[in-house]
Length: 178
Image (cartoon, rainbow, N blue to C red; front, side, top):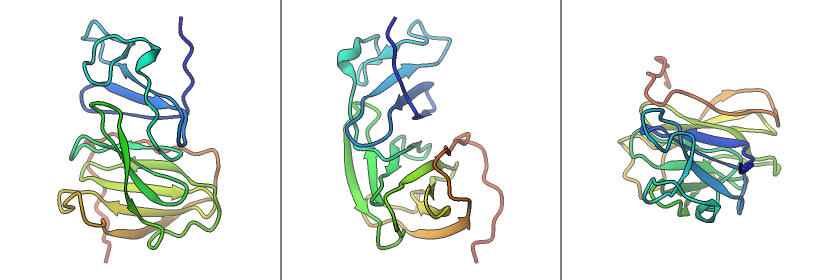
């Protein structure tokens, strides 16, 4: 039996768990959690979704957490320097697509431990040191290329023992963003 450690992850709409140790250069696995498939609870190849050995681990350049987007099917993460990373769930490749430090202050190197996506494609990140929660617009309004809109969302507690989680298709509460 293989032992695999993970402290961050999210699930896509097809029933695959993407999990691994947070941070740049750590190993991630794609695990089937759909009990209707014969590969249920097995690590699978990122490309073929067939059972695979540990040789198919990938090392995306993520931050402390990440979130699956139900809008475009990609995985997003904000790293400690507020760089927005996109991970391709089809092969595990990753790339920094935008530097958002001009919009999201990072006064220390504690990172963003709680990250989650809502049903509209808004990406929420909580800074561990300040507790500031920001909303990054990765919704249908975003073209996937230009710098996304970023806004301060709420003040939360500072924390290093946090995580972000949300059902990707659950409707967001009605909030007036002014």
